[in-house]
Length: 459
Ligand code: UD1
Ligand code: CA
Image (cartoon, rainbow, N blue to C red; front, top):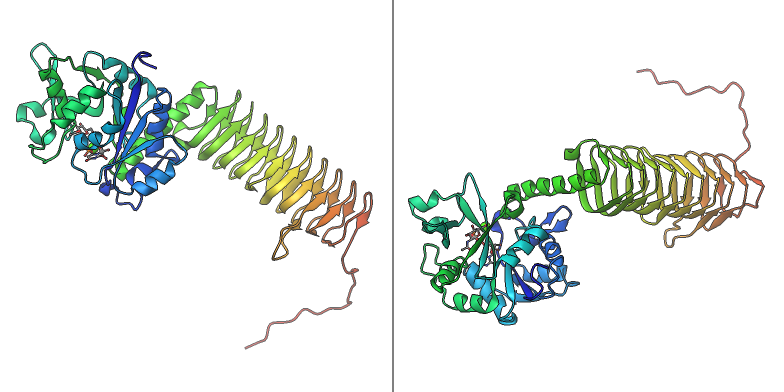
């Protein structure tokens, strides 16, 4: 925390309609890196150690509240959007005068905890405002300074003179101030300006008039404080966020074949010497062990991949765990509840669902294995299907250690294939197969001599 002595309260403005997104979803719920915009802001706040977080909501407020029901937030309704100052005012009754209040925006998602700490810590002699220098400051509020460089106020684009519009230092919107003083300034705001709004920014000139010193904390990364008003800006922010996340993986020692072609939409933890090929999407909680390799165009969601396991291209994992030394894919699909031990081989066009597979077993080609428990050293042949669903209920298939399931067999669950048993190719198994036995269930092969194939009709 920036200042141990002064407690911190946080106000996040999220009442804007976001009409330029042209979406049914409230703006702050638009996903960025797999999470709602507002979630990013809240996570940046988490590191500040404040348990006093207020969100000002308006349009679509119920959906926003529902999305963050698991968090300890105080909600303040701003029924009509009368300006940023009016918005902050809605939250102030719930905030103690003695706190430093940090004002953030639900649509400025890439701001870092470090920047927020700096800003909060700077609000001692008076309010602190986060500014950046922009080559093209058009549209933003400009920071005005006196002849010796002290901040005197913020003037909005629409209210600025020609001269003021040439100022390149802009207001990011993020402001920190003592709550008691903030309340008194907000109570004195007028909407006598070109937009007829109550501007939060007007508190800066009020603070100066009260004889306080305003601190401009200059950010060095404009991308960090970029607001999102439309889909283009959302797409730009997505790229910026992905660069940040990929860089963290590179710094952790991961080989990323093309940093521009990896998308991380969750939390990734990695061992040493992990390799990620192009086109990979990692979502939710992902854990990649030492030396794991994720092949091109693989999509992993909430998955753990053990050390030295090789995932070949175009594999899709969801809610599953894979041990070490496994080979998976190409084109493998591990669905929820797939739990593979070590040295397991899963080949192309194989689907595994809610199934445990013990060490060294192989399911190499074109198979469906669902609701099953497979022992170690098992070989499941090409095209094998566990018939786990009878149209009403799911049933389990058990294949014990060392069993061999011939190609194209169907195992009609519930059924157990015993240890070291063999199931002949093409068998339909409806009864348990005893250990060490061979099960066959096909019509004996016969031959019809001189068989003539049909010939095509003429004309
Ligand atoms: C604001 C600042 C401007 C700054 C810019 C940075 C003011 C008057 N101006 O301008 O100096 O350069 O941000 O992006 O503060 N909101 C509400 N309720 C309202 C109005 C706004 O919740 O009544 C929220 C919006 O959802 C948005 C944020 O406040 O998240 C900023 O509002 P916006 O209208 O975009 O302000 P700007 O005109 O861009
Ligand atoms: Ca804006």
